[in-house]
Image 1: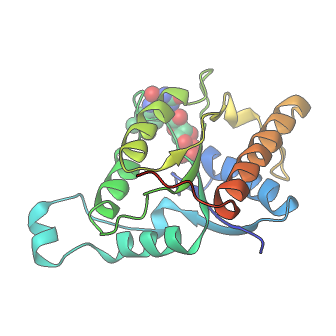
Image 2: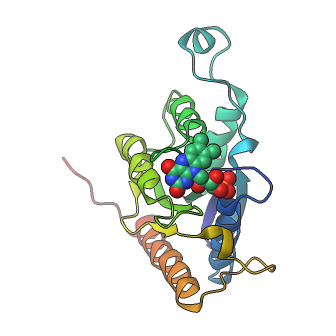
Length: 193
Ligand code: FNR
């Protein structure tokens, strides 16, 4: 069966460069035969985590919906901004809420992280911060991360990456990740005692 990919932008704002990057990655997934479930972080609205809220009304619907979408799809591709050299609080807050659901849905999930920024570093420091909670939760975060520098000038009006080698690198990165997701999904599991 074709595998399903939740392709999400960690920024929901109109004109978001991470949204543009997520859209281009989604196209690469579809071109290779994957099924895309596109999302924005703003689709999963949650309040700031508070243990009293959790003890009262429980985990908010936004986190429950994110869990459903993670479980429905075989893998996650997440393009996230970098805020102050780290992961945006909104992204971490959604991960925190969702981690309170048991069994928590990040366990053994295949994840590809990406970033886009107008800066020269492309938001790469934010991805190293994003890996920490995801890996802590047992997600299989793909080693090769895609960071798009000078992202404000990187896309054509049709939403494609203007630079040929850069576009090839993105498409190859997505393809290599999809090969791994195929292998991880279809091969017999190695069981540890
Ligand atoms: C930023 N930005 C930013 N960029 C960067 O490369 N490194 C950084 O540390 C930060 N820090 C930062 C903090 C805060 C609070 C904001 C709002 C922004 C700039 C950021 O990359 C830029 O606004 C992007 O356009 C945000 O991503 P989207 O919304 O375009 O996807």
